[in-house]
Image 1 (cartoon, rainbow, N blue to C red):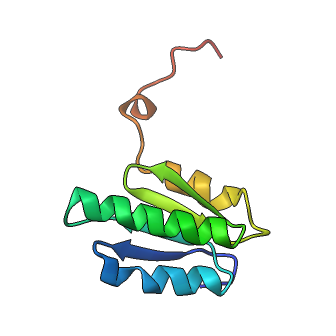
Image 2 (tube, rainbow, N blue to C red):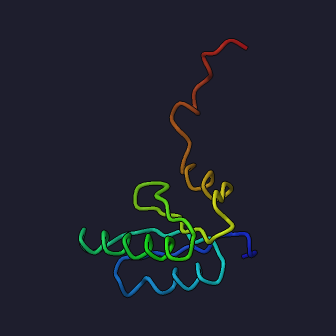
Length: 102
């Protein structure tokens, strides 16, 4: 993985937060797939990463359901990752012919 590629982490409990936090602190954009055991735990984890980003002038944003992007300072707007995250699978519309005139 090159330094421009984000690290990816599955987080389901508070015990899992140190891996993504360390990756972020080392200067890497970090994708977090949040899959909490309990809804309250999920809120606490989001609060933790929000505080981490705020305290270090980074950013923390939700990019899809249960998918978050933690971006270090100076990398705000990490567009290549975001556009990649938002594309998950082809739409059924993509499989049909366009109705637009050529």
